[in-house]
Length: 367
Image (cartoon, rainbow, N blue to C red):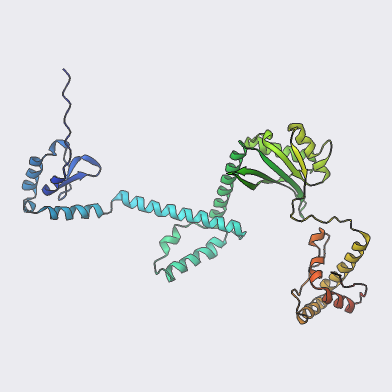
């Protein structure tokens, strides 16, 4: 015959008058409020509890329930090790969260990573001490913002964003845009953007930026894109359209990037575009515009290359109440970056200084 199942006694709120409460770590066991001793479940009956109170705490046996309730309240408010660890852990988590948020702000503003330790933490300390009138040492210590910490936070957030974006691109269709450019240090940089629909909104994100180690041919650009797609497990079939500029490496009929992509995705739509908001003006200008531009370039360089001319020009601009009083030395870059833009707002000043330095062929640009 199987052994009868033991009856487990339940705690009653009336047991507080004997000085007993439920054990917080084991509710089926009674806990004495006075000596903090825990008893088994079998002892959870009025006769056993009252017997303990009479024998072990005879001076408390005549106390009313209010007395024991006050002791219970004090015990509940008393900090325990678990509560202390929980509070400390929460403060550490808040400090870590603040570290990530501040690192994100540093990345967005493009400031050096040392600004966190050199400026932000001292500023936070000053605010806490001066405005809140609280000690700031413990709070500052929980916000890691050293140069290495900020760099690590930014890298982790960038990896997380890239991972989330690639995971989404694995299951949705999107358009891709690529542009290759050579930096002044002769480094070939390939940029890629994607545009897709998410939550009924058109979103645009930068997919990657990577250096082309050797040449900038269309096949090399395609191999770079294919390597990235293979690593991130993004299907090529998800590409609906591709946008590039008109460079031969991109639009070449046989070995251009678009030709290589169409071999992989025959139905992809190729769109010609320019990455910049405004269409960059070609270097081959009309003869009339080219001649006028050369006059402007000659005047700007004569003003800017001589320190005396530069100072005289600055004083002249101030006297004429011009919006600007400095010019940039012309270099062989795209037309939008040339000094014609600044000269447009300083026509009289440029013409007068050009006449002073001996170049009377520099005429005032017409609006």
